[in-house]
Length: 84
Image (tube, rainbow, N blue to C red; front, side, top):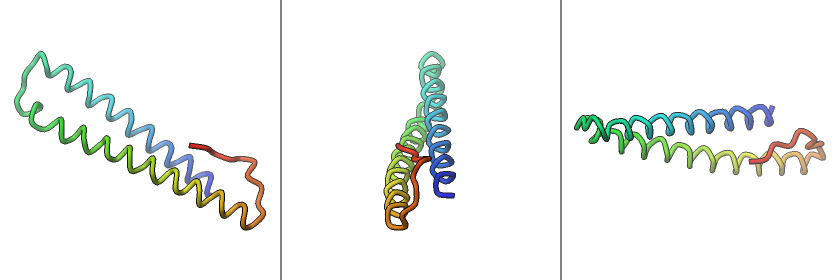
């Protein structure tokens, strides 16, 4: 179950990274358009998504440590070990 959660968190991180790439594309395309609405809003959106990636990465690392400690404390095999 913990490995499944780790995979799902990794999927969330990957999705957020894709969103960040798309936002960067829109920002770059808007350089030619010069739409003020996008100029004003996209930097904040970019920053929030970037923070989300940082937060999910931190959570992944902490949960991985928790899973590893749980496995060790309960003498469980970590054959399916997921690393971040």
